[in-house]
Image 1 (cartoon, rainbow, N blue to C red):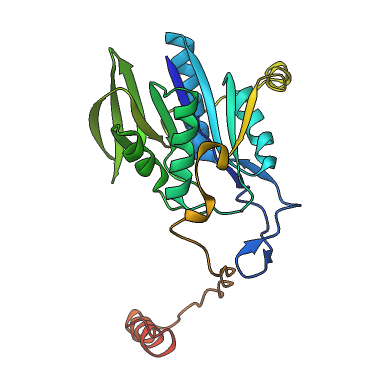
Image 2: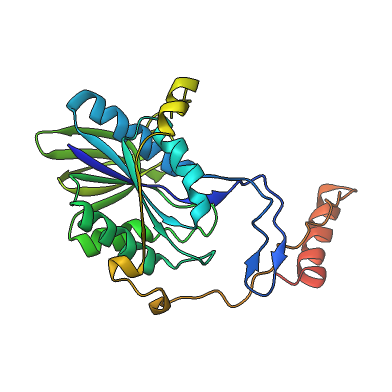
Length: 256
């Protein structure tokens, strides 16, 4: 079984972001990591291959620095990787899906494709659906339980309120992994050293016949989130507190 896992190189959610220009940010000194949801996909793919045999291929679209993130996924047990190199900090989901599909097609389409349920930086939650559409395969997201047997995948989906839905699909398919699917392993030192010798094929968008200027969405401006104001404690009786709360919402915050 051949499984591809799409892994995105993203800023650590604890990093302090400094804007640069109208639509970029300083990325030379902040820590980047693998998108946390993608790690559930890596773990599930590696576990499946350990049981069934085959190989796990990491596919990443990003800048040259993404090699560090790819090595981390390889240390978890992935066998090799493909890096589609870009120069921009942001690539819209439609273009990303085209690049991922083109890279996989050139390498030989897999039996399964894993992604995270979404990325923690742009949070568009569209790439997996667009990729599945281009590949002509079924897709399911928010997967917290998975069984693969006899050319079929049975997925448990989080639908809110603690409820789950069960979906059965034929392979190949795209699985969007989320928390609860597994517990990603922590690579040991020997695995980290072995990962340094594993193969990473680097290609450009042009090599794949994908035009970066054809993106349908672009970021015009970025703004830092405003600082949250402090909490305000209301005193008096319950009736007085409710009256004051309504006044604040109506006159000060203007939300009612």
